[in-house]
Length: 384
Image (cartoon, rainbow, N blue to C red; front, top):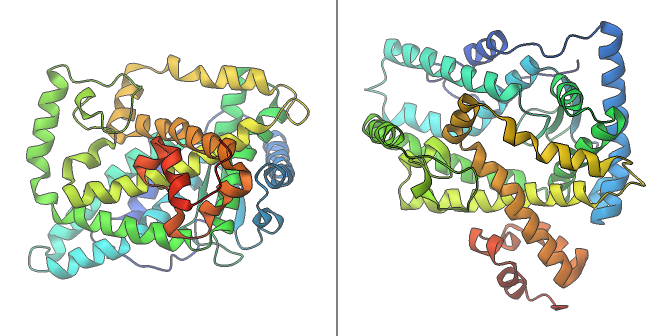
């Protein structure tokens, strides 16, 4: 497998507050390697995924009309295993959380002795590792705009080969078709950030503000956790379906455990990030679903079997998905896709593509659910 997890992260967070090396090593120990395959089979899968990723770019350009798809040399394409994916994500978290952790180290210097910080960093690093181990077996691909890239200022697209191989076998679908279908979604994310080079810094700023706000209120977390646990044991649960804000369905709300620390300002920041993620995921899903059998011959079978996968999850996985807010992420796919389809239907793909021009053109969470409001705010000619 290919990876660059040894690259140096540009922003160094105080290492004693979160032990990132421990997070990466813990994830590697806790996750399984995936399907058993020979060295020659691994090489063939890697080569095939790289070819599918390259081929998908032309289709993304054809469907989206974004010229950014013509040249993606400022970001990396990596075929990785589960442990490498987890380590790469510790680097991304380190970059995203660095400003907030540095602020915490400065403002609470007296509270954070070297010994207590080291102990806390060890515990938190192990916890991060456990979460990443769980996620490392679920993720098929990821465009990471925040991690270090070898080829320039862009991010890196990671395709997790063991997981793609496992799912295509589980679904019993054509491997070549499935790999191209997955690459269409993931390459769309790569194109989005190339089309909107301001988006990375915009998201990083909002993530830093949100993380800083949550850490400032971490002292009250134990009481909130106790309240949430009581809610769980008294029957609070999620249906796995719904809409943003459906906090009555389970004690964590749609944003998982983060909702326990949110005040109104944090919720506003989260609302903005939710809208952005809904846009990005929904747009990628629209591109993925725009292909027909002339591009992916078995696409209808793949869609049907892939969409049915969630019904087979066990109780433990369903619980963890609720705690981590993964059910909310799945709703982002459908909410964002409805927004994109409605806008394209009313103003065409060129009109929709104005969303990539600036941060002011990004939809709000309200507009994600009411696309006509975004069209009106943008002053776009409405085709009805």
